[in-house]
Length: 405
Image (cartoon, rainbow, N blue to C red; front, side, top):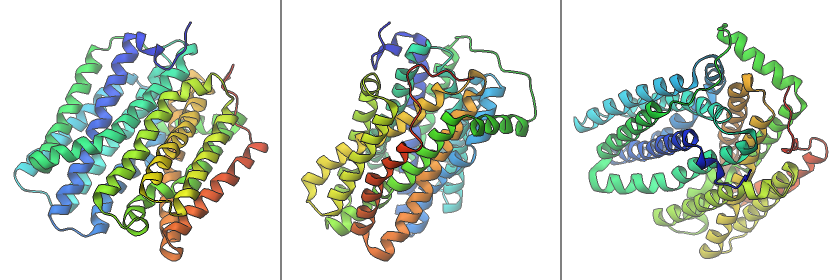
């Protein structure tokens, strides 16, 4: 059977949940743009506006483990429906408050965080569903397509959100977000594929502990978790410092910042779209090692101040390398996890990935404050080039013939 990048789309159930994932991620991106813009036009300081990103990402990291356990304990489709229903209610409330001009900063940020809690519950259930609706031979390609959907939304969502805000203001963005979640609910209601029945109901902490015990006892999963957090800790500088690259290193404004993010996002889409092709030809270790070397070299070149056009070209390459690696960690986590634990293992990989980005961004921000943006990018790039040496001691598990027990 053909296992090309887009071959899983022949399965109707997978196509439906992929569309659901795409609409949900688009809604999240548009809502974040609307919240940030609403705070901006209210004249809030930068640290308050930046809390929108914290509210968007922190709940996903903190709730990943219980959300993964719920995905294994309960009907995955029901978990996704409950999450999306709650998100519709929250987004409608946010839109109504915006139309009534009742948007104090604490309320905006709090509702954004609650919406992120819904995302945290939705994502592991969706990811854990994939293995039950496509054959194992198609699993890696299906996971890569799910990551591709995320990166398309991450790349185009802010641009679409900006256009919606420009036409109708933040309230219009909140309304469109609610509509996107309604579309996801319609898609989930049309999805009738039977998934493996959840196991015996047990206390949540027992279920989470079972996932931890398996992860600690599995050399393959331990390695994936170690490589994921070390990669994102070392490499998150470019994503965190991109506004300062635009203003301080290039001397430009918001339009250039958008171009830089767009270049990274375009590279991310290319990386996700080609990940299956690379996976069919190279080992997991070769892909992660190559991605780290390419991304590190890009950071070093950008740090040297090569100008706007070369920087944009480099960032496309860097974004592709970044997502090749993140796709590799996600695929390995699912391929080496038993079916009964796949929600929890997927959530662990996601939690450490988000945690590495969050902690790394904070650390590189402090480094840049003390030593400059260019020095931070240079140090991050050099560290990324050295990092593949970890593979000599803890090589990535091979994706060919993974047999979880």
